[in-house]
Length: 134
Image 1 (cartoon, helix red, strand yellow):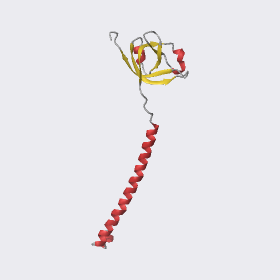
Image 2: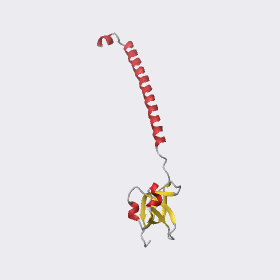
Image 3: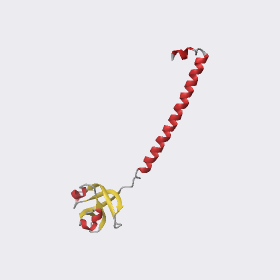
Image 4: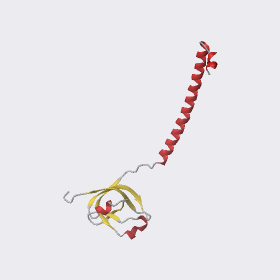
């Protein structure tokens, strides 16, 4: 390798280094452009695949147990009832928060959805139990 560079001195060495620099500059910019386009495409696919956030709904009332056989296919066994005993909305949760809050007056937060029978229900994320003296 040193024998190849031995012939280049002065202006010809400078010219060779400039050609090498330009070649690698063009190569680097090309690779950067391609990698950037691939990254943009992946980001766009991820953005499309993510769920759009829905606004969280909340209701206030007493959490009451209902017969699970009424909504067997949806696995719903709780309903929110107002002070007059009228049903407000069906309730469903992935954990035991409704079991713990059963019979208590409070506010439930979550996302609304429809049952198989096209009834509204709330997938509960959070329950805030209110004190009776409030």
